[in-house]
Amino acid sequence: MEKFRVNIENTNAEVFARIMKSTASKYDCSVDIDFNDGKRDIRFVGDNAVKRHVVKEVADIFE
Image 1: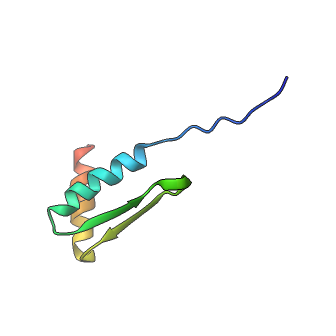
Image 2: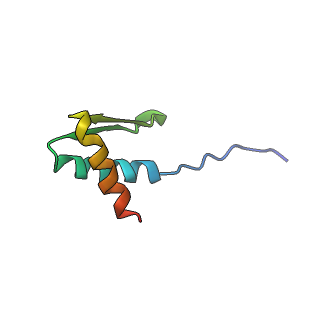
């Protein structure tokens, strides 16, 4: 019997990043998302003092 590898993608990180990007825009910030070619790069762009507010607001959505 020949075995083959199955890759299961978890897209939760991308969904979370896109919600974070939308929330960051309210604070005149952004989130760069690069999920191409197997990458999982998410980078906050803007005032670092605002970052904790964005993260808290997104976390509150899932509580």
